[in-house]
Length: 147
Image (cartoon, rainbow, N blue to C red; front, side, top):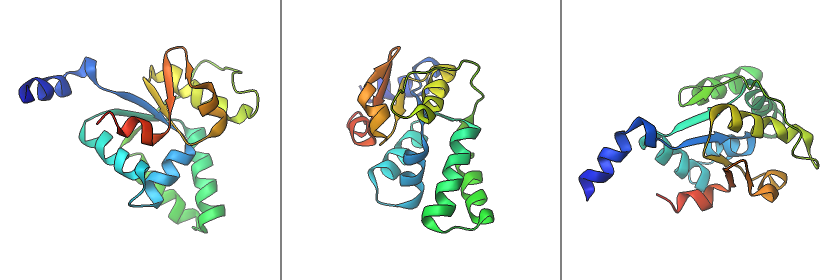
């Protein structure tokens, strides 16, 4: 049974694909013992594909500078580390799904472009959707239970 799990883990077709948003990136990189940080480690170790966009990273940098008082260079360094595990993609399709906060549409667009299985977020506007075109929208706590 254990061998079957390892075999599936190594199968490219069975890799979990996730899109991460700004608040997941902030939580996973700024608090070592957060659920998001624990989940990020598990995703990396399981060889999951983690996707983001330049717009999401730009927003993450802005939050790091504004709310955590990092300098531009320090925020840039953190973004560089995020790019060690996250794949940067450029969505081709625009959507207008999140009516309460249209800026959140960039996360949906990333998930569509990357064919993600999940969107990992703490954003209430995204979580309210629960799912979009087969892409489940979950808090890190919910997906951590899968590991």
